[in-house]
Amino acid sequence: HDGTIYVTGSYSRLYAVDVKTGQKKWQYDHRLPEGIMPCCDVVNRGAAIYKDKIYFATLDARLVALNKDTGKVVWSKKLADYQAGFSATAAPLVVDGKIITGNSGGEFGIIGMVEARDAETGELIWQRPTVEGNMGTLNGKESTMTGKLNASWPGDMYKTGGGATWLGGTYDPETKTLFFGTGNPAPWNSHLRPGDNLYTSSTLAIDPSNGEIKWHYQTTPHDGWDFDGVNELVSFDLKKDGQVIKAGAKADRNGFFYVLDRTNGKLLNASPFVTKITWAKEIDLKTGRPVYIDDNRPGAPEAAEKGKSVFAAPAFLGAKNWMPMAYSPATDLFYVPANEWGMDIWNEPITYKKGAAYLGAGFTIKPLYNDYIGALRAIDPKTGKIVWEYKNPAPLWGGVLTTAGNLVFTGTPEGYLKAFDAKSGKEVWHFNTGSGVVGSPVTWEQDGEQYVAVVSGWGGAVPLWGGDVAKLVKDINQGGSLWVFKLPKA
Ligand code: CA
Image (cartoon, rainbow, N blue to C red; front, top):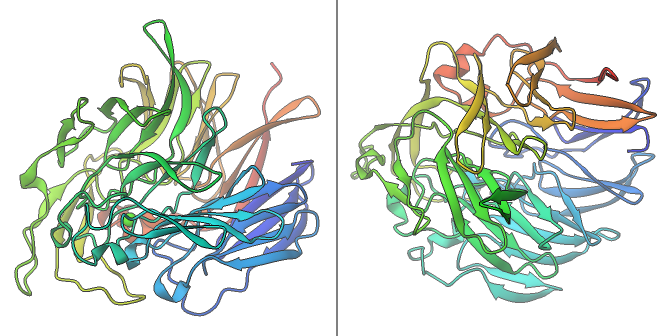
């Protein structure tokens, strides 16, 4: 923005860097208290700029507004109680002068939330809980309940039901709608919460003016595998049979690539984007619901004993995790950073305790193939067919970028930023940054030249939770650096 690159880093830090020279202009280090509870490393997924301020969320569940030129704090607001397991890692959105945020902490029995605040003052405008039975607010008063009390949750389970919105959301100005994905229901042990457990593992379409839910689509009803439905819904024009449909696509953690009508949430198509899915046979296009394979759900614990262990694919880290896919209107293809892995998973007895992990499950992640885990796949949304793929030894954990010049960029844990031909998938360029790339490339034009930048720095959920895969990637160097490239003019 105006010759400055803003980068959010680990431990809730934000850097402003001069594009042309790489010189640091300022740095903000958020003072984190003892006892924060990030589940999956000390990550942050980005900032938002509006007028003279830059906004980002912090690991102690605060939203901070800084002056974008000086890095000085303008306001700092508490989003939630970090001692109850809440944190904040999502990039905020700016819509109509409001800052829209999600929350994190679904592994601690928190309640997922989408919130809107005044960009100038940080005052709360509305809140929308993502778990059915909890009450929303608007302008300081109760507004409407999310869903219907106890319709899809037994007893008091909805009070600690998860559904964190930790990836943040997207906004579609054409339909004036926010799209937020919601995380897993809590606890992981699904036998404790019979029902669909709305609105966890779903995409919610939300009215930005008042926080009301316009529609929802649940990708994994009654999830039992930690299939967070947080993945981004990307708006696009689906050209099919001579028509143009206002559509949205989502590559879900559960292994299916969904195409929805984004005006009403109706399912148009769903197809696997990984080679092995054990939990469901398919998605029924009439009902929009998965056809479960009941034997492949981890069993219920009996008394103090763990339940039946199953081998499940995808692994809970997902056929796709946080890393955003990209869409090119030039090729009409989506580019999805996928991973091929499975897990042994079983359930264990659990009771809720404030600020403690609330899983009731154990697991070990395993690769499916000897030669690769990551797979960047080009998908045709009209058919769900995979047009090309690039296989990567380590799991892909970085975002994807397409350009009007028909390039696709993504990074790898092995340290490479890579460029592919968007039509053929041929690798046309790579550069090693010295640490694993788990950030998202960005591009812009400045003084007649096109730039591409990426942050490099290994970390996140894979080394912490990856089981046998974590052992495979244990020698990757940590580090944090920002790399800026120019594209050739020709
Ligand atoms: Ca989760």
